[in-house]
Length: 113
Image 1 (cartoon, rainbow, N blue to C red):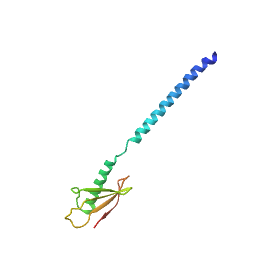
Image 2: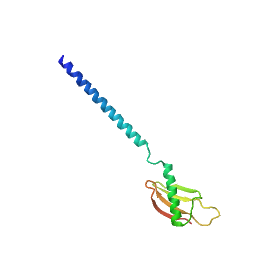
Image 3: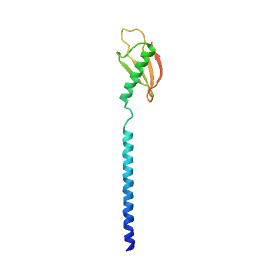
Image 4: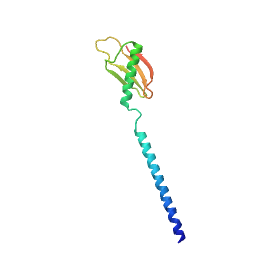
């Protein structure tokens, strides 16, 4: 019977170790799923910031404020083209700004005719 006496503490220790590992794995999976599901910035916030950045750039570099006009953000894959609607009674084109989606940095600007 000495073999039974020594096997019980060993079995209990193995059960404790297994339970601790299981808890550790579950906590790790919970933390990983929480971090993965939490977006750093949602798309609507990024689009709003891109519109603000583009409007500020156009005001600074082209000299006119377009905040009272309808701003447009056109998806081009890895970038957005930000421009605005030109009034029907206006002759000429509109300024546009190309903005990187990830960094929200301005890659370039143009003026249409």
